[in-house]
Length: 427
Ligand code: PMP
Image 1 (cartoon, protein in one colour):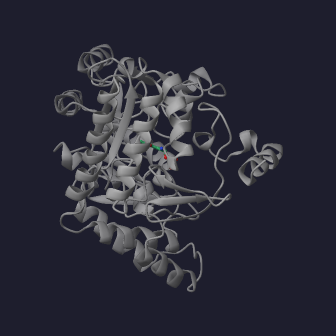
Image 2 (cartoon, rainbow, N blue to C red):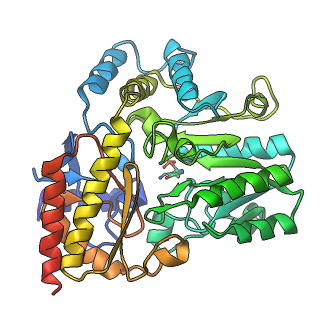
Image 3 (cartoon, protein in one colour):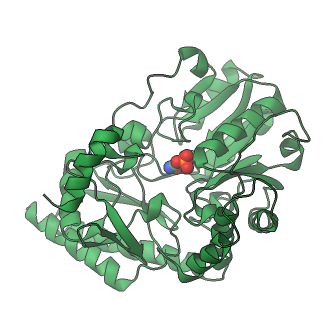
């Protein structure tokens, strides 16, 4: 038994499934989750001293690679000034200014501690502002684990076969309308049915919790138009896509202006941070200046703000996103080439530094139904082969992959060669 297996056995005694977040578990791909000792650049190292090229990147934030020296040093410096005060700091103002300058649709922002808090609070604000109760979400999109959002959700909820969670009273979800991703007609129907009851649409602009499914540009524009027509707010959930598919997030990439934006992961540089923000007239409804309540003891934590501010400053540099895009294309092109050589049906979606592999004969994967056609059994075999060869993808056929600036030819070529060796075994 190796050290990961032994820790997993111990963890299972005291933690449900041995993990603190289901998406880390290997229940869907089979086997034991890796217990990680450390990470550096493009690599993570497990407790058994094996190195892996990492395409999880802490589920998104590690765009600059792990253990970036400037972020590590800024955090160490901040730690010596105390871990938390529960009072305002200059760093909160600096990060707020930086985010609002990068994403102009965010006129005002509030920091929280996770993506879940960001989406939950954005929806409360949307409901309070519009005086309406209903929201629209899309099947296969995940927006954290608030009750009324765990309806036909993606991510771990989808991977483990409970997209609609028990423990959520029917009364709590009766205002959640679920539509089909990339299908504007389904949204139109909901608005026609409830023309003056829908507070907001919440959408992942590149769905990264049912693998990786980019929105069609006309879909996002259509959502914007419908919101304008019916007086609803458009909430773009950029927890995954913000500062990842482009510096200004997917709203910049698609040139769509939301009313509210949810952020997470990246703005903490790897520390627990989330945020929501948007139009000033909406954000000003928040306590203490408005009646809509939202709060957090550790929100705007000085260490997390320092990590996020340092990371975003480093990302705010010319050429970075082109480089990320070309690294992701290099990986996708290489994998598609070797798959074709070996007659393996593979589709790859990618936007900026996000990508998704689908073992499928479907030509274009653009909907939840398309995603569901992919061969999970083949993915699981591929997954374990890649692990053996020292490549770490998310342990689920329904999660996106993430590229970082620390990845280079060596890591990408190794990934393609390892995949090629797997594809050859299928002949
Ligand atoms: N929204 C999206 C789009 C996400 O991808 C996630 C997490 N993967 C969340 C919200 C929830 O974020 P957190 O896990 O930080 O609560």
